[in-house]
Structures are given as structure tokens and as C-alpha cells.
Image (cartoon, rainbow, N blue to C red; front, side, top):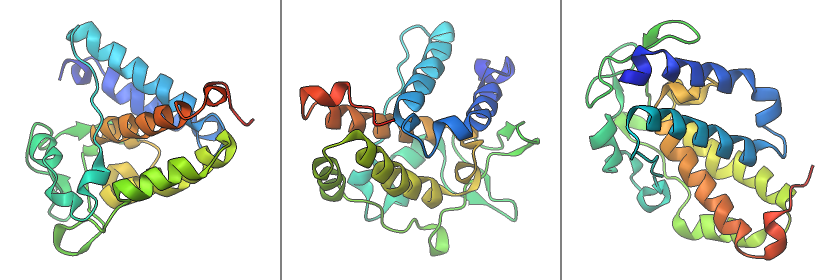
Length: 194
């Protein structure tokens, strides 16, 4: 809440949008987002020094993501004609960029469901299938990463997606998968592909 009051939270959404040409669809996607998440974590630590950003391994919930415990913690699907989040700590939360509006989510399935996501096995298969950074980053960005943004929909579907706190949990999981890919072979820590 303090970051919101200080307009720091909104600034991160604006920064993310401003760096779209550099940080998306390029080899910089993974390192840029790792740094971005770390900067946000650092901003949180200025308010609460012991806080860390967790990741949400949504692949464990892949067959019924809308039932994940995470939505009980941060609020669930949006409601009403504007798809505003109505429960949890972000209920009736107003984001200010690009224009003031309520925090929105519109799960991509029928009746408040989320269509099935990548399973743990399919995520592991993707990590294990690509030996070079260039192919790994491209497949992960367009595959599991993009599918999750589309599944949550609402504010998560545009480049101001850090307006939704689930962005940080999702990108924590994206980064975890990059770290696991890097750990497969020593050269992966230096492989960049661009």
C-alpha cells in the first residue's frame, strides 16, 4: 500500500511499458525481467526490509488454475461489467497507468475458469529440449509466459501488466525456469544469443 501511495507501484507499470521494444521478443527478455523484478523487490524492501517476492508455480495448478490458493490470497477473477477485482487485498484497487481504472482480471475460460495451462511435465520438457539460449528464451516467452498473461487477461494482457500484482509472482516463476535452464550446463550461465 505504501508503494501505491508513493506512486512507485504505478511507476513500475509505466517503466515496463516503456521498455517493450527492448524487453520483449528479444534475447533481453529474461535478463531484463530478472532485473526488473529485483528492482521491484528492492523497492518493497525499502518499506519492509525482510520481504522477498515469491514465485507462483502455476504449472502445479495447470488443470484448474482458477482454484489455486494464490487467488484466495490476492483476489480472484474480476466481476461486473468492467471485470474489477472485488475480493482480497486488491479489491477495488485503482491503477493509474495508462489511465485510472480498477484492477481488472477476466479469466479466459467460461464461467470464471482458466483454460488449462502448461503442466509441470511440459514445462520441464521445454527446459530440457533447448540447448541454446536463443531458442529457449523465444519458446518460453511465446509459450508458457505468454499463455499465462492471456489466461489471467484483464490488466495482465497489456504491457502495463505490472498493474496486476500477479505479474510479479508469474515472472518469479519465469525466472525460476530460466535459472533451472542455466543450471543444466556451465555454459548456459553465459549464453545470451543476441
